[in-house]
Structures are given as structure tokens and as C-alpha cells.
Length: 155
Image (cartoon, rainbow, N blue to C red; front, side):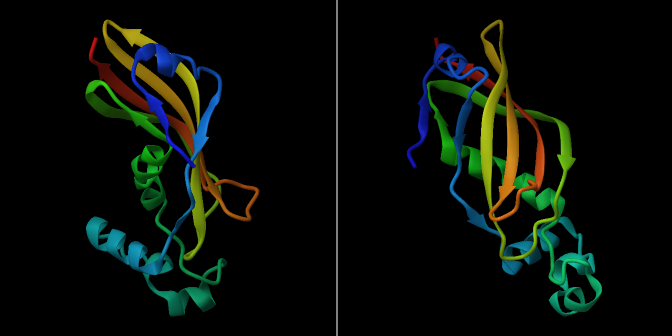
């Protein structure tokens, strides 16, 4: 899949109300889950103890931390879009985020993004993207919400 290249406010605005794209799939491994646990000090057994998860978890395997799946947003977003001609880009926020489905170890996830809203704030572009993290083979997404980016395009 090729990336969408955005060079200006007007080019980004042309996607208003449209799906911008879908990332490639990314496999959530136990190694990644363990490294995330190390980074966040969240060692809950349901994430890091595969043997216990087999018997005590309703999922029968470990699952990714919800915040691990959120942390993949930038990585997956950059597979969809390359925004050029910017002085600065800021991850401004996440609105209305809802976790819908746990992500079991070795699941493959991908991001689906749609431009919901865009506004020019005196030269700073505020873009609201509907972000859905899909799990391969599962009708219910891992999460959905609105990610907000600020882009300061060169004139």
C-alpha cells in the first residue's frame, strides 16, 4: 500500500468526511507485551504470564495492554499518511476513546483512519481523525476514538 502524501491544509481538507486509509497489519508479540510492561511497570499477569493466562484467563492467552495498542497509533498512522511541508506536528489529544475488544498475543492489528473534522486556527491545522484499531478476523475492533493532531504547515 502506498502512503497518502499531504503537503498543505487544502490537501488535508480534501479528505474531510472520507477514509484516508488503512495501515498494514502489525503482529502483537509476547516480546512486545513484555517490553511494554517493562516500560510502564504494569506487570499484571494477564499480560505477562502465558502459563497462568492459559488456565485463568477467559482469553486462554495473554493479552496486550490497552495502552500498548494506543501507543501504536503513531506508528500505524505514519504507514497511512506522510504529512510534508510542516514546521511542527503535535499529538494534541484523544477524544471519546472506547476499548471494545481485548487483543490476544499474536493477533494482527491495523489502523483505519477517517478525517472527521479539520479547522484552521490562525495557521495551525487541527485535524480530528476517527481511528479504529481493527483485529484481523474479528468483527469487533480493539478500540475506536478520535485522535487530534496539530499541524503547522509552512506557507
